[in-house]
Length: 534
Image (tube, rainbow, N blue to C red; front, top):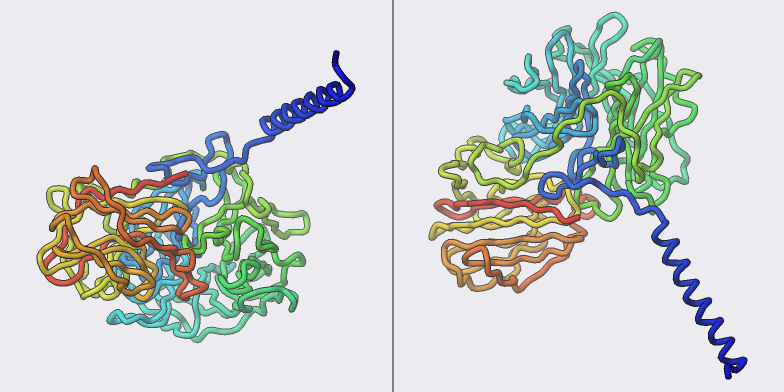
């Protein structure tokens, strides 16, 4: 006969089971977090497919976006720093799905910072600030290039002789005059053809200042963009520094009825700012405004992904509304959640395959040399689905490796590598010439690269033709090698690369996968493969 203890035990077990079932039901009823759609090779794709998108619209290193509406078409480009060909121009008809169409800058004129893309009287212009590098002919100034077709050819750069400013933003006044607004609240007049400056820069605007207690990198008023809407000119800027503390960068605005001022600061500045380190996107700022295909308004700006400084600043899209008092407001919150897509756009294919069998020319659209010397292109020969890369320098530091932008948190690259007797080639994750990691191989030995230096190695038991796979998962890098691309051996050294970024090294760059060839002779690369992991 059941005892009182048995009854209590039975009730307790039943309650426990009921609680488990209730918890299970609650878990199954809880909405699953929305994530990116898998694109080509598993790459992150913003367009979810249900009328919404999830930022970033361009993943990976696409900082300082400048955007142009040209009829039903949109064009966007970004700071390209030491990567050449530089200033890759992307095309879209819905502001969410983007494809690269050309690289506008082919000659190394220095480290390219925040450019401005515009169209005036049927001609396209790119205004380009640069910092001097070791490349011959590079200098700290701003330049202009132009084209009658967005796909080029683009002109050779013309020096505008602006050595003390960055971030030129093109504007046209109410009288048709042309101007460049510059960092620090300055501006300079342009000639009517937009190809020369007239006079000296003048200070015209004192930027809004944030409260003293905010955690920022520096004041740094920069990235000025001017847009005309209704009866006002609106001046959009960034302050607070572009990296450093996650809460530093921000977007502010001012307005004037004339291109000549006076400029009135937005009463609700800042319009965009990361306020907590727990947010998805850090250091959000440097915005450009654009009218959407359906007549609504949007802003593009950049931000660092929480926990992934290594990917560089990525391009974000947020809705913009015009308020009854004649100001603008940014929506989307911290951009961690899906947003309804712009109205009326036409979606297209997003991105491009990063795998390369070297049957077509992807130089410029994907592959870019790091800080190349004149004639660097002569090192490349594509023939019979093989990339022949002439060796240069002695290490990855001075070999000007071929790199591309990685859009994903987790990915791997694989390639078959064939080495001449006096050459060394391999796969890298490359920040700059002093900070990189990866592996190189010659006929006898593998060489490990870590922290931008050689760190031992291992015997090459595969011969002069070897398959190498480099995997980066949550900043943990592992390497495998193979004789036939089927049976793989783990390389004896692993790495952690979460610190390979600007706040450690400087330079505002990103950790990019790539190929290198050093020594004498050449290195041949076959069947390069990229694969992202969700």
